[in-house]
Amino acid sequence: MDQKVLMRFVKLLALATFVMFSFWMGWSYLQPGEPGDYHVRQGDIYLSSENYEDAIKSFDAALEASPDHRGALMGRAIAFMQLKRDKDAEAEFTYLIEYLTKNLQSDDPTGVGTLAAALANRGILYDRTGRYEKALADYIEAIKVDEGILKGPSLVDKIVYGTPDAATVRGRALYLKEQLALPESQRLLRVPEKDAEQRMHKP
Image (cartoon, rainbow, N blue to C red; front, side):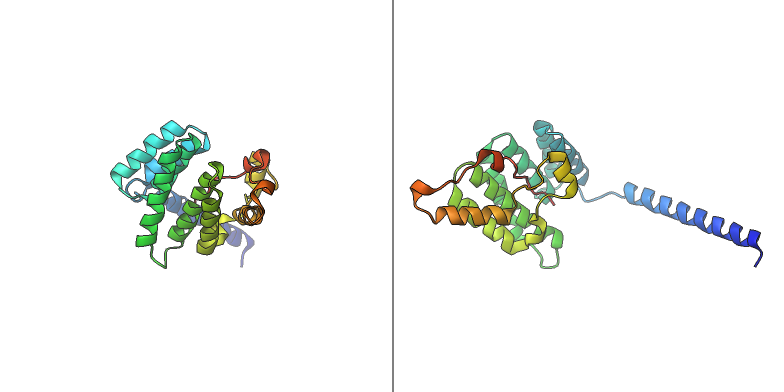
C-alpha cells in the first residue's frame, strides 16, 4: 500500500475517533440526570470547600426536586456534622440508613456503598460525641455491609490532607473494641490528633 495513502487513512481514523469521542462526551454532559443530581453535585463542591451552609441549601434544593435523594441526604448529614449540629446530623444519618435498609436492591452496588458510608459516618459522629459503644456497633455494621468502600484515603487524599496513615473504619473499630474491653480507668478512647484524621465517607 502507498505510504501516503496509509498515512492519510491513519490521520482520518484518528480524526474520526476524536470527533466521536468529543460528541460522546458532550452528549453525556448534556444528558439530564436524575432530579436533584445537579444540586447534589453543587452541594458536593461546597462541601469540599468547607462552605457548609451553602452546601445545605444545595442539598435542600435537591431534596425538593427528589425527596429521599440519597446523595442529598448524605451530603446534608455531613454538612450538619461539620457544623456541629449533632442532633440534626444523627437524625439525617439515621433516616438515610433506615430508608436504604428498607428499599435497597441487592443489585445496587452504589446503594450498598452509600449504606456502608452512612453507618461509618454515624459511627464517627457517635465517636466524636463520646458514645463509643454505639460508634463501635456502627463501624462493625458498616464493615459487614461493604468494607471496600471504607478503605483508607487515596493517594491524592493523603497528599491533600497530609495524613499518610489516616485511621480506617476497621482500625478504629479494633482500637475501640480493645479499649472498651479494659477497665474504665485504663481506657484511652480519645486521641485528638489521631481522631482529627478521620474523614467522612461519601460514595
